[in-house]
Image 1 (tube, rainbow, N blue to C red):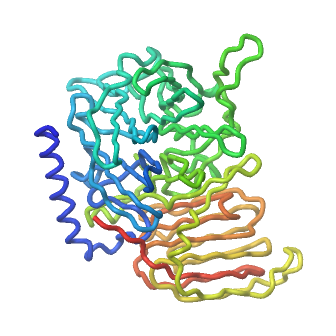
Image 2: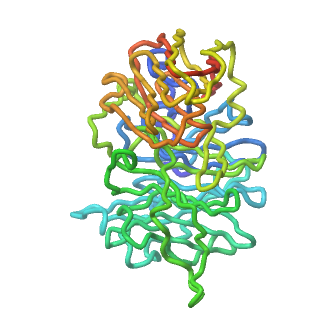
Amino acid sequence: MSALSKVLAQEIRKIEDTHLVEQTLQKYRLTHHLMPPAGWLNDPNGLCYFKGRYHVFFQYSPFEVEGGLKCWGHYSSEDLIEWRYEGAPLLPDSPDDCHGVYSGSALVEGGKMHLFYTGNVKLDGDYDYINNGRVTSTIHVESEDGIHFGEKAVVIPFSAYPADYTCHIRDPKVWKQGDTYRMILGGRKKDDRGAVLFYTSSDLRAWSFEKEVSTEEPFGYMWECPDYFELGGRGVLSVSPQGLEREEYRYQNVYQSGYFLTDVDEKNPDDGAFRKYINDGTFREWDMGFDFYAPQTFTDGKGRRILIGWMGMPDAQEEYINPTAQEGWQHCLTLPRELTAKGEKIYQYPVQEFDALRMECCKLNSETICDAGKAQNMKKVRTNVAGPFDLELEVGGDSTEIHLGADLSLVYENGCAELKLSEEAGAGRRRRKARLDELKEVRIVADTSAVEIYLNRGEVVFSTRYFPAETKKYLEIKAEAFRGRVYALAGMTFSL
C-alpha cells in the first residue's frame, strides 16, 4: 500500500467512525437498505457471489455529502440479511484513477475475484470534459479473498478506444461466454448517440474491440452502466440512457434505466457481419419510481439472476432537496431482486431471503375476492403501522387506492398506476405514472425513508425515497375487494 493509499484509508475511517457515533441522531437512517457509512453513495458495482458470500461494492464519496471524489465501498453477506461493511478497498490512488474510481463489475474465475472499473482523470485546462480533457481507462484488479486486492493494471487504455467516441466511455461489465471473456462499455459518440462497445479477451488482460451496438435513430446521447445476460432463452441488454425526452407515462426522470430483449450476436444474413442496430421500440424501463438508476445484475450460487439498483438519481432537474444530506449521507441501494422472464417482460421481486425478516402480521380482508364486474362498492380498511413493514395484497376490481398516511399514495384506475407523494415527503417530487392492463397483486416494502412497490409480482415496480414527518402512520386500503397481510419487519443486521 502506497503512502497516499494509507492516508486516504485513514481519513475515510475517521469520517466513518464519526458518523457511526452520530447514527442515533439520524431520523431517516435506513434499516432494510444498504446505505453509505458516511457521505454519498451511487452506482452498485462488482456484484458477485464468491466463496460463500455475496459481495456488493458501490461508488462512494465519503468526503462530500453532495458527491465528489469517488472510491468503492464494500458490503458482504452470507444470506443477504446480515451485512458486514468491509471498508473502501479501491481508492483513487494511482495516476490512472486519481480523479475517481468509477463504476465497474466483478468476475469470479479460477478461485479469484476479478474487478474491472473505469479510472477517471480530468486534465487541468480549458476543456469541456466531454470531447476533450478527460481520460477514462479500463482497470483490472484481482483478489483471492474478496477483501484484499492486488496491483491495478490498465487493460484498455483511453488511447485504444474508437476514434469516433467522446471522452465518455465507462462502466465495464465482464462475463465469460464459452472459452471467451467478454466486456461491454457504455459510450457517447461524437454525434451525440449512445452506444455500447463490445470487447473480447482470452486471458482477462489483453482485450480486442469486437463491435458496437446502438439504435438506428439516436436513443439518448449517452448509454451508461451497460449489462448483458441471458434469461429465459433471451438476450437482455440493460443500459441507462441519458437524453430521452420526458413523457407522461415513460421516461419521467432526468435519466432512465431499462433493457432491450435482443440477441446482440445476431448476424446479417447477407454479409455475416454482426447486426449493429437494435430496435428502440423494445426498450422497457426497469423501474417507474422517482429513485432508480444504474442497475447491475449477477448470478448467485443458486443460479438466480439478481438485480440491485441505485435508489438515487444524478443531475436531478426537479427542486429535490434530500433531507438526509443534513444527516451527513445520501442515497441507498434497492433490495436484491430476483429476475424472471415472462413473455416480452422481465419481472422483479425481492429475493426470498427477505421474507425471513417478517414478524407479527395483521390480516387485511374485505371479503372473498370478486370478479371485477361483480363488485359494486369500494371497501376500506385502515390499520396503524409504526416503522418498516412489508405488505402483500391481492386486489379485485378496476380501482384500488393504498395510502401510507398523508405522505404516499398508490392509485390504480383506468389502466394507470400512479404513485403520489406529499410535498414534504417527496422533497420536491410529486407523482410518477405507469401503464398496467390490470392490477391483481401489490407488495410494498416500506423502510424508514425508502419504499419499493411491486405490482403483479414485479411486472411494474416503483422505487422511491420518501421523507415522512412521522414514523407512526396509518395504512389505508380501498378497493372493490382485497385480502392480504401487513408484516412488521425485524431489522437487517449491519456491522461496520
